[in-house]
Image (cartoon, rainbow, N blue to C red; front, side, top):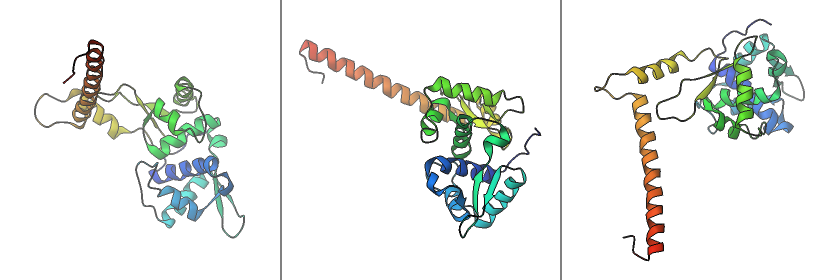
Amino acid sequence: MTALPVLSLLETRVLGVLAEKQRTVPDSYPLTLNSLVSGCNQKSSRDPVMEASEAEVQAALDALRSLSLIVETSGGRAMRYGHNIERVLHIPTQSTALLTMLMLRGPQTAGELRINCDRLHKFADISSVEGFLTELAEREAGALVMELPRQPGSRENRWVHLLSGVPVIEERAYVAAAFAPQGGDVTVGEIAALKANVARLEAEVGDLRALVGKLCAELGVSAE
């Protein structure tokens, strides 16, 4: 199998919408162009949110059809479109569900993917998600996902799809955050780390207050 060319953001969005709607609204699938445009421009469960025109979505469909990733049918009064991800990429439906969420919502942790994939495929646990992600990352025909470097203050690594190429900009941001000199302007990574630390400290304070309240109640004294 020849490697796929790098897809545009809109092309991956079109693929993601088709794969999503196949599972969530099967009665409406394959989708008309109008439904597909609405799905691409959906405000919820999309990152980034976009405003693609009908002509732009049609152009993306044409490009994907040339790669056999799109199936076109002429049912009813309008053309309808479906995806051909499993057959072209030779991956199971579980992997398609993960790719779909990554295409629609951007980088996510394995835990986030398990939750967000719930309507497409119910993974038994996070280990199952990680297993399929690893298969996609170590695929002989070419990796379809990769694990990003851990962000400052984060407990889990996020995963990203590679259908639009390696996220060079994001990797540079992580490197800049890791090697930024002390003093001067505050980096995005440092802000994220500070927010994480504040959230952790607030949680610890809450736990301490609860413990003090419990001890005071047992001793019969006021916690004020």
